[in-house]
Length: 214
Image (cartoon, rainbow, N blue to C red; front, side, top):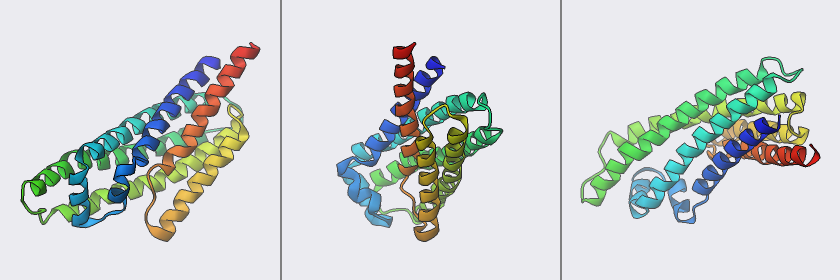
């Protein structure tokens, strides 16, 4: 149990930290809120930082998925959780795949487009259409990820492997993501990683407590 909690804690805390650092890099605040050609121009002004942020997003997504996979294995062994943890993991895997596809577009096509504009060229006519389509990938990831967080939250509450309040927090963030999408059609990606980060921190605390009392 202690070894499982430590692994879960390290993966989720590291993954969540990577995402939160990427989301809150001060230089990129104007980029995250820009749209269209303006976004391409701003990315060009912060090209290196923007690439770093998206690599951190990708690393965080991978680490978080691995951590939630380990958490799923732990929860599946607890009475009362049923198949809910496995369903939540499947949704998280789908959300992560869609999000990583969006990031791959950013790190390849968008970078080449930024370089074209920096060299004096124009934004290709097709870019905005494809960019909007890849934005739709994140929208789908936000919906599936929100449902997954609700599933993980209920599983944690039922399983007792982590403090119950962390489960309700995950339910709250999952509902927040779904509500934001319904109202604004826009969900900040970091919201998907807040609850898993809390899972990770509390898992490390619980593992340390078990060590101290064991």
